[in-house]
Image (cartoon, rainbow, N blue to C red; front, side, top):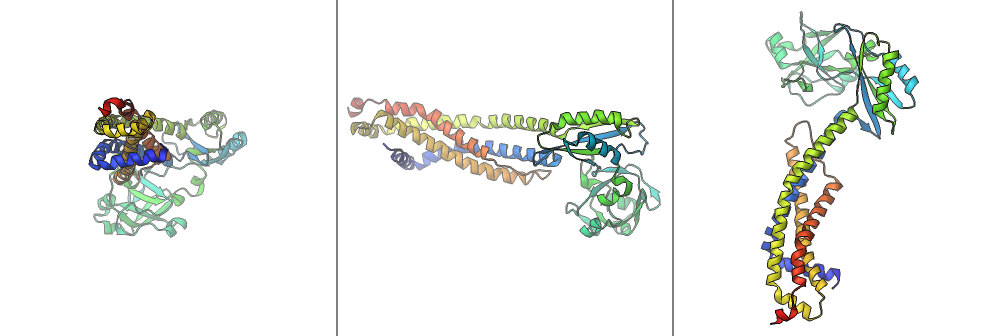
Length: 401
């Protein structure tokens, strides 16, 4: 029989018992859907981490060098333009760009609010307007404010009530940070910032460009190193660190520390991959159970269709054709369930990701589709081969009796 005829015959046989066929595929569908959901969410987490670290872009890698002064009260910056020039002169063939890196999330400041200096105050700095806060009074920072470096700032609701009793009273008041006097134009709803990891849970939100203007724009305690594609970023960063210890302008005033975000990201990704594989393996147990169900159905089908098998053998069908037909039925059954499970898993992962924190989105890859197709086809082959062999090995003489 031709392959098209075998496929047509297999589909007709499965349509003859639609309820039984559907119920048999449910196990495959559930197993594949669970695995695809887990893989999609795992890929989404890895992508979110990669975007957050921003370690690779167009094949380029980035690492960081940080300076910690020996005197905790020191205001001396660890890096300046002279240090950047030293790095470019010595490592220019490998380092595409060296730039001062400024902290923007929950930066510690001691502002003067009204006539009172506040210690242990946090400010988060932005370069473009955000919609991730709820304005309780006044207005939000605008694009014009940020581009024109207007000395305006937002204050957290709890701080405003503590200093001025009501959020309305805080509007128009002043906040002095360093040499810059800011005007409060808006009060935003307080957000939880228990561990200091919520950017919008800070006491103040201001303009990053204005905050790091003047001399602070070209000095700082951190630098970001961007390497050309193909450069061993980790090894080169270590060399730059040793070079700074010898030649850095602040080498005698503190210590340098290298931070390779790419290496840290690789470790995290490996952990997530391992955890995803482990959970997927547990979910895959349902595929084994579903495979047993497929085998049981195929044995029943072979038993019910003894006369059909006898007629096929009597008119000249080879045992191999009979075996191929029943094996193909099992494969069509499991692949159909696998594709249905893939679609359900895709949709389920998308729904779940809407409720996940940190803006994580499900990511479906071609590898996920090939996995769903390959696993479901393999289940059909593995659990369908024995019933198919039984059908092919039936004795024509015994069937005719």
